Length: 170
Image (cartoon, rainbow, N blue to C red; front, side, top):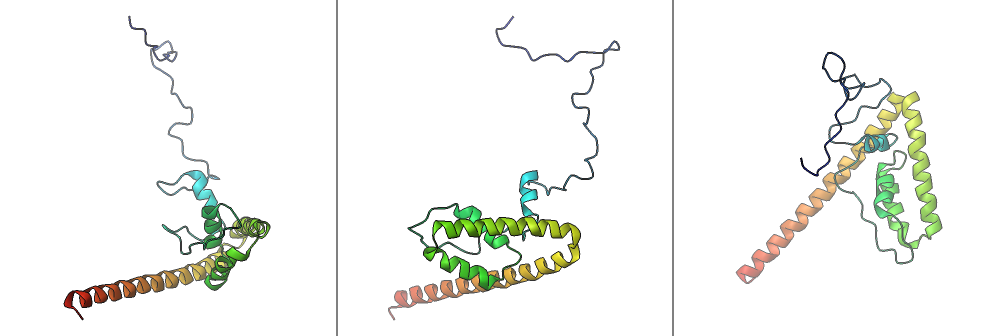
């Protein structure tokens, strides 16, 4: 006999069969449970309610702010997910960060969290209206992403042209 502990054996009924481990195994999910996209945890899906869809990367980068320390990732998620702010307004918030005190940044975070909660409530009551506003904001984001991509391609093309000129001795 080995010294390793053996896993407990579940009790058997008189017929020799084992009862199921989970009484809810195989049952359909409750109707009030949110549908969670594949690969996403329930908590991640719940955090999207009341906000725009998350992106693979961020649209903005926070400029240096030597006088304050805060959770930049959370700030960007809340800001970029904001339904009420236009892209121009979000850009102005980002540009203002170096001039803001920690109290002002904390207040912004609080406002973004409250907005997220309120829009989640509105989504339940006025789903079509919120969906239209979200679609409008998503379109703004798509246009911004295309512009950023074009600017990146232009910069890449200029860099390649400069490298070619140097190679040719021009």
